[in-house]
Image (cartoon, rainbow, N blue to C red; front, side, top):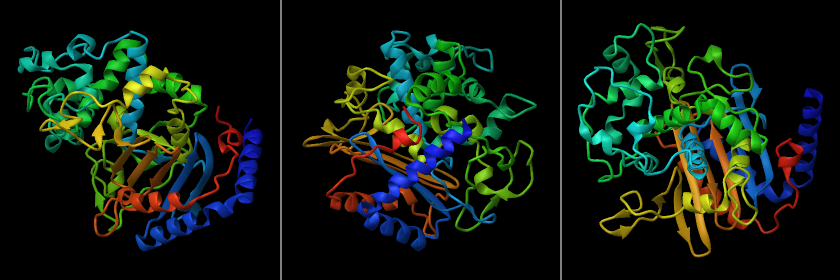
Length: 409
């Protein structure tokens, strides 16, 4: 099997080389951007009408070892994980296992850590839909998911807090606003969605997503990431900071040691809101399945349409005026005359990512193993306009599909 996959990989490179001229300006733009911002490594995958027409690694997966980024190199994808979680939730809705209007407390098998019930009765009002659209009651400024030490200490645990412990802790805290009355981006809300998937399906979040979202698309290498560099996946890149910042984890095998700041964060409890690692072509395959004309292998067309639909509420409107772009269900959406652009950005220490699918059928995934440049500008956001501009210049798109040669379904 390994030999077969190697042959497929070499074949894909051969096919790509024959048609590389269409992307010469794109490549030069990308390489110049990396040089100007001192980016160690990156991966770029491009789709056209749901076909993979370009996939390539740039720079170093490991600068010290001089290991280059390959097409199959894995990166932390950060908040692109939320789109995956949203699809999983809507799949369960489609199957009538849950409803968007279900109350979260009726689905969760989690009890408050203080055994006094819910301090804030508004917890009883939170619905699945509120969580999908970041209207659950927590502000972005006070996101608990980055404070594993506080939760661990509050629960008096001898080992680091797990994903469910964050919910137990927050059930003992007051909400910052009544559910549905504000829109505020919340990693914690998507953590709850991951636990709902587990409690409804009796499967781990990772296993459910792999079995029902990824494997049906032929994506077999995606998995949840680990904090400690020693435990990273075989094909996973090394993560960098432009100022070589260091920090000290409060848990794990590197507890109280100085390590690169990317290996301090709590990715091992971020699964459903920011924990996946993937290659750019993996995420391009995921992105490519949302083509209404061709149908989607993992959700029905009516669900797909609903996922990107403008909803009533503050995620899509402000002062009764329609937002553009607006937040749908796990995706940002920008309406266009001929359709919708869907996209998402992600960032963690050592990571900057984006995925875009435009209404004209052109889409891409960009993964960097550094978060920002020395001016603290997010890399994926910084290159976004450049990519739109150069994509607009491509007149003749290849007709081949590298998904097939790379072994995807």
